[in-house]
Image 1 (tube, rainbow, N blue to C red):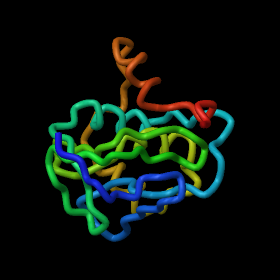
Image 2: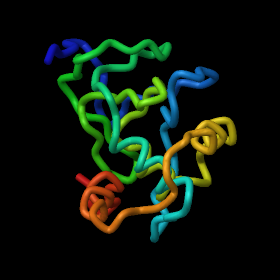
Image 3: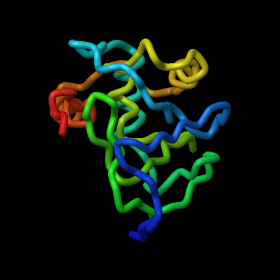
Length: 147
């Protein structure tokens, strides 16, 4: 994997991509996480699409994707949950980051309607298989992981 050398991926860096249909949920919540996650059809659909990603890489500030490129840092949600150092391509070609399921579950009130509509349009299942529960909880993330 190649790494970006000058990527700002600290707790202070904000990368929000608006108005780009190629990316989903590239947001930066400002409020702490809800006490309990919202596990509904949208959250489960996003998980089911995410777990079948086809490629990893890096999404630039304008939404362009570079395959097999990671950053030398990590992205942190305002609540302390940590992302991975790369982004992911879903089967439909749209890009997400590791926190996409977390944002839906813990920061739903801060997600713009445009982004929720992108998730609604995904074709993934809204059923969480028992065999996926452990993976779901890992990807979901927990705000108690604060650094």
